[in-house]
Length: 276
Image (cartoon, rainbow, N blue to C red):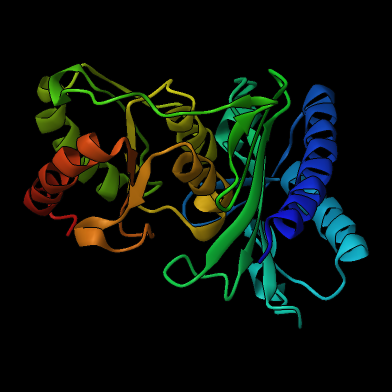
């Protein structure tokens, strides 16, 4: 798709994401109520998650009635559309942060060409908005990544021992225990570990040079659709194991040289912990 077309898609993503983030922030100020749990008691959805996703869906339908829609809170009513494009949406990424009032949550909106499957799609445009600090991350395919109007670039080559590495954890207690084994082995080999609990922000922080690398197991398509594009357009390698696309099995984002060192190390550590 032409660059100007991607730019038009980005304008829609940015406008809708900004408005949706403002709605999420208003609802947070009014007080948050848990609506339900999903995969476990820790995996929650708030009424605001549902309201914000419904707002995004209505807004995108009005702007792009022929496109498909794939959102975290309405996967059972995803639509395919007829245009070949699908909007992949996380209405509130970092819901536990949102619940506790931690200023690290966001609205994430991406538009992809093809099925909403990271192994086959081509991400065209994406926007990640953190309304608490007023940061808007954007990217288009082959058009670069930006924080506001400032171009983003990943950190330069970094030795593993000096790398600040971010990660996240599963909702399953059993899987978290296995992930702890990975961290116990990794932590002595890197500068330090960070965990903020919002995958889209983690990916954008790699793009902005706030992290040297980020990895996680268990990311769903809406968790990384926009953030992975921002990271990639800022010069990061975004990959799964053995050169596979980023997926629920494994996602790594880092400067190319660091990614080449981290990926085989993490593959070995994941295997030893029973995660592969």
